[in-house]
Image 1: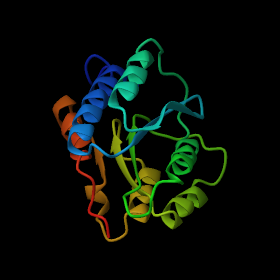
Image 2 (image 1 turned 90 degrees about the vertical axis):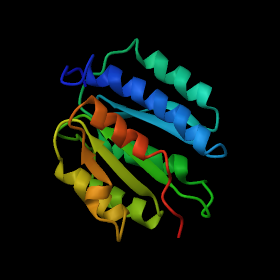
Image 3 (image 1 turned 30 degrees about the horizontal axis):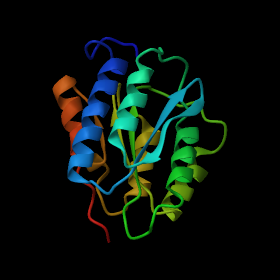
Image 4 (image 1 turned 60 degrees about the horizontal axis):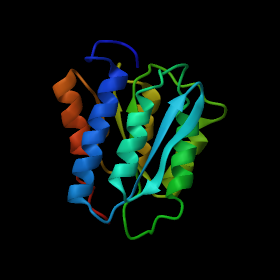
Length: 178
C-alpha cells in the first residue's frame, strides 16, 4: 500500500476516498451502519465498530494516517471479523463486505474456502476492488458470495485515481434485497 502508482500513495489515497465514501454513503443511506476493518501483518484490525455515525468512522480513518502500512494481509481473518460483525444484522437488510485489496497475495491461517462457505451460508455479499492486479481468490470470493451476478460486476481492479474513486463510489448504492 506504500506504492506510489496512485498519488500520493495507495494508502493515503484509500483513506481519503473511503472518507468521501462514508460521507456519501450516509447521505444516501441514513439508517445504515458501517464497520471498518484493516489488514496488517496477517491480522485483521478493527478500525471502527459497526455504527451509524459517520464522524466516528472518519475520525478513526484519519488516525490511521499516523501509521504506516506493513506486512502482508490476511483476507481470511478480515472476512471472519466482518462476518462476526454482521452476525446480528437483521435479515431483511443487506449484509455486505467491501474489500479494498492492495496486495497480490493473502497469508491466511486456515482454509479460506471454508470461510467463503460460511459467508455464503450467512448471506453476506462481497465486493472487491483491487489495487494491484486480479487475484484468483478474490474472484472466487465474489463469484461464490454473489450467485447469479457476473463476477466482473463485483470485482474490479483500479486503473488510476479517477477509476479507483468511481469503483468505491459505485458501492454507495446497496444492491436490491431479495
